[in-house]
Length: 188
Image (tube, rainbow, N blue to C red; front, top):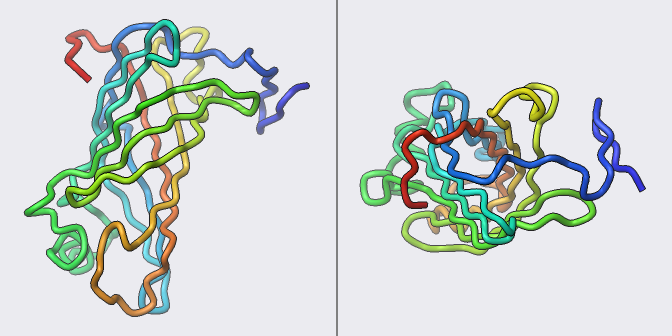
């Protein structure tokens, strides 16, 4: 059986992975994007992402920690950014960081999966996601850098209990980060 993705054919178990060791996210090329319906229109935004990844042997012992600064939400509208970072939504002053800590990394026939805890506004939520290693833009064969992308769905009730006209219950997010070897490893 061979899985096909645009431009790439992957046989189960044949997808390469980052080498064992400590990795860091390149903050200039790592982000979280989101799209949500609110007040009858689609709102799209972005948050910068930082973090650390430890690839271990066996792979199931690997760990990742990703963090986004809630106060740096960017939608292209300064007024909307302030509103989203404000106390009725992300409450960035009280909860400056949104984070994900993995508890398990596993290879399944359809690719890599991560299971962990997403912490939003001081509360943790279980989250599972598929990880796609992008071989086209950052080849794993010749470069120590690895682009990883995953798609998540957040429940808007995790973020706010306030009524916001037309806010969609499900908020799709794309988490994309570029890993590079960490020259100064820190605890994950």
